[in-house]
Image (cartoon, rainbow, N blue to C red; front, top):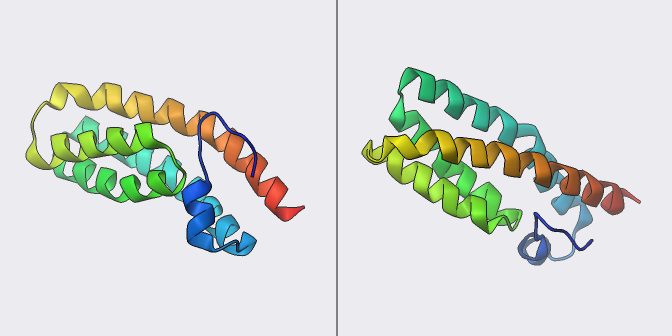
Length: 119
């Protein structure tokens, strides 16, 4: 495992019990589904569908914890809270922007890790 700035795969490595295939599957799934989830939250923001945002954020929380992205776990918790309780709605756009940027930065490192796992 590389030394990364945006991700920390120690938890995922422990969870996988050293299985490279398991780690690859989880990372690939994260890369495949997370951008769509973020996009769906942005669409929900435009529709003011707060429950949808809260629900998606709840699911993302676990994915971010697997990737060791603690800032995004916290952002997900906050989005979940804002969405499900329809409160502090003014925070949602900034949190989504933060999530978009963090994903883009993490994606590079995750792809690097995938290539190391496959070699």
